[in-house]
Image (tube, rainbow, N blue to C red; front, side, top):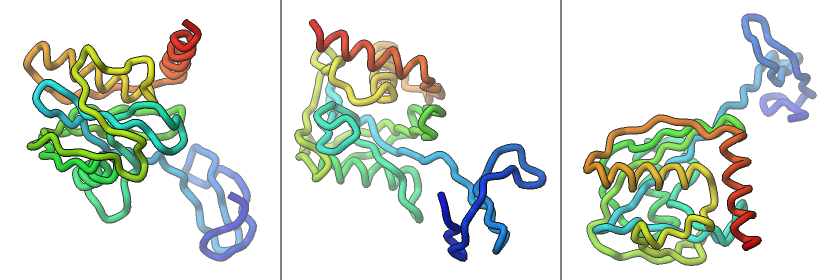
Length: 192
């Protein structure tokens, strides 16, 4: 950030009084600009014993599979955001059950909120951000072609919980080590 979005004057980076982190500060209008993590809301859409995945048509990670999810918009709830993203990416209507996985991804300043959702009908199609959309049984999940470590973590939790017959809410994180391991495994699989 170079200029204040309130008055247009140049900003500086400093630690405001009563704060402990560097912020963008405008000395002209005294606005402090806070940059906070983005919320990603999505679903684990389930039909029978299968999960709906979308192959990404946009960067980052174009051509890789993901659960339908995206950035929350202003003036919507997390449940509304998750349902909207599922419709936009997979043209699927879902009945959302509950918040299933909350993942802190501090290395990219995002918080993933993934909701467990039932698909009443196996009706879906690729939206503008998807190349294709498909229902996958656990044994058919393209593990080496998943877009993000948050998606892998969510899917592994789901299939583990399904074997147990219980779907509690999980809170976890993805750190730099997790990300490095995830992307290294994908590259190793490609080399085979």
